[in-house]
Length: 195
Image 1 (cartoon, rainbow, N blue to C red):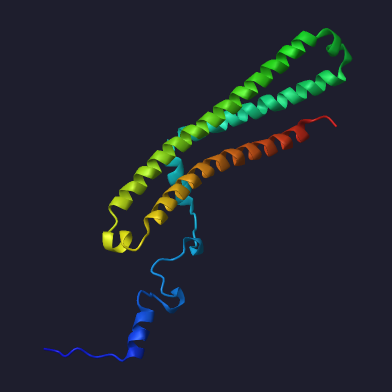
Image 2 (image 1 turned 135 degrees about the horizontal axis):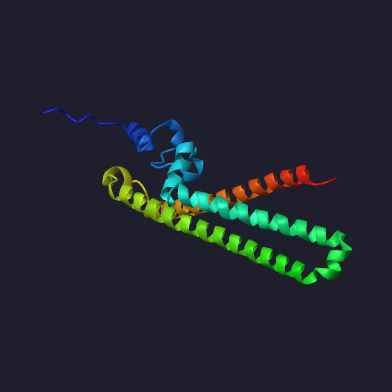
């Protein structure tokens, strides 16, 4: 029977101070502060995001709704400019002008509504898929290595933050596409315009 080694009070204090430390820098914390984590997003993450939202078809429909809306808006501005510089068109073709402008404005609004609904549908699909994946992984996490050392509030906070970031990613994708197509349309108008 091995005798238990007796420690002096200073040795006990030293062991107690290092208890739970992984390294000297973590200052006895069992878990890291989530604000200190370094997060990197790779291309594969965006590919998974597109797959989770319903595939490439919705991205195609989103792009079409954006392009058609921007084309209608650009033609409407062009048509108003043509009407403003042509006095004969102002007098004779007022009803036609009003009808075309109202039609283009209405179609632009429909395209904006469609692209917003498409993004909402994408967010719904991706949110449900990511939530189900996260729940699956949480339920399969080892109790002693995850649940015992991770506070419940932190788990809930991560869930809500991750789902919020998924939603934000789709709105950012939508507005990046809108800005990109608007810039492209500006370049086309500058190239085509008669100076």
